[in-house]
Image 1 (tube, rainbow, N blue to C red):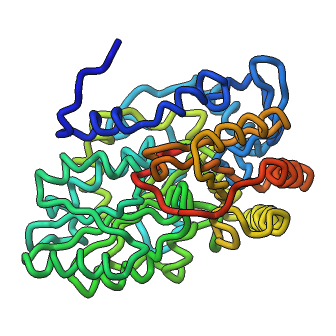
Image 2 (image 1 turned 90 degrees about the horizontal axis):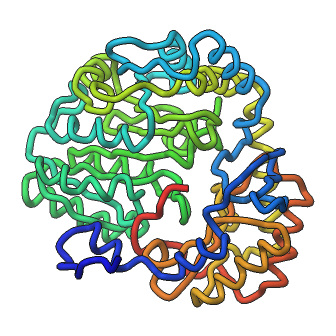
Image 3 (image 1 turned 90 degrees about the vertical axis):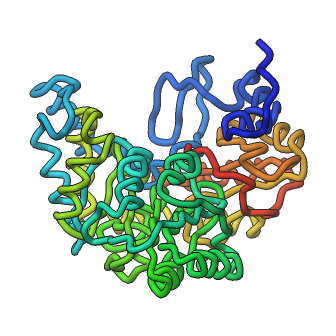
Length: 426
C-alpha cells in the first residue's frame, strides 16, 4: 500500500518519507534483521544454517552468557514461572528490591529505581522533571528542553510531551557555541534549561557530560543523561562512562538514566535519582511504573546476578578485555574507523555512498561477519555507516577477520561521525 503524502507536520511522516530505500534492500537480502537459531559466544547460527561472527549485540562485556546469570534465570523460572504480571506498586518479586539495593552500591550516593527499559525511564521521569514534581530538582521557571541533535530517538520522539511543559529546541553538544547559545536563549527568556544528551553515542563518540553538567548548573538548569551505551564499560564496579566522567559522584543538577540490557548483561533500565524522596514520587506518579508490569522475573533474577558480578573483581577483567579488543581493531585498521582511539565500544566504517556500504555489507557476510548497516536518516544523506559493536567475548581471530575483510572492502574512512537524526537503538 502506498503511504499517504506527507504534510511534513509530524515526525513520523517525516521519518517515513526520509528513510532510505536502501534499508529495505538490506532487509530483503537478509543483510540485517538476522534470524538467529543458536549462539556460542560471538558465533551465531542463522536460519539458513550458516555460522557467522556477530558484531551486532550491544552486550559489550559478554555478561548475557555468564553462567551466574543463566543459573539465576533458570532458578527464578522454577520458583516463579516466567512472569509475575503486576505493576511493581502492587506486587513484585524479591529480586526487585535486591537489585535496587545492589545498584545503590554500584552508584553510591544515589537512589536507583528500576524500569522495564531506558525508554520508559524517559517517559516516566521527564514529565515529572518538567512539571517540577521531583523534590530535589525544583523548576522555578517554565522549563526549556534543550535536546542534543545526536541524542537517542527515544528522547527525540517525546517532543510533543515536553511541549506540554515548555518550549523545545535542539542543539549540538559537540559544538561549544551551540551549547552556549542554547543556554543563553533559555536565560534571556527566563526559563529553566533542561538539557537532554546521551553519554556514549549509539553511532558516534562521547558526549562531554562533565562540562555540560557544569554549564547547566551555572545557568540554573539540569542535565539529563541517557548513558545506556556507557553502562558497565567504564569505571569502578562498571558504573559507566558518565559517572566515571563525573568523578564517581552524580552532580546535584544531573539525572542519569541507564540500561540493564546492554553492557550490564540483563534486561531493563534504571533511574539514578538524588534521594529516596524523589524515588517515592517516581513510583507514585511515573506512568510506566504505575500502569506497566515489572521486568520479567527470570531477567530480574539475572539482573541481580549481573549486579553481583559488577561488584566483584571480575568486572575490571571484562572491561580490560573489551578495551584490548578495541585497541587491537584500531591498530589493525590503522585508525580509519569512526571512534578509533575513543573509549567507546562502537566502531564504524563510513562510506561515501549507500551502494558502497551495501556492497561492503554483502562481502562481510560472505566472509562470515555481520553488523548493523545504517543509512539515511540515521546517518547523513547519501552515505552509509557499518556499525561494529565490540565485546569482551570477541577472540583475537574475530577481530582479525573483521580487519582483514575491511581491508579487502577498502573505500571506507572515519568520515562524518555525527548523525543527521537520532540513531535507532540496537
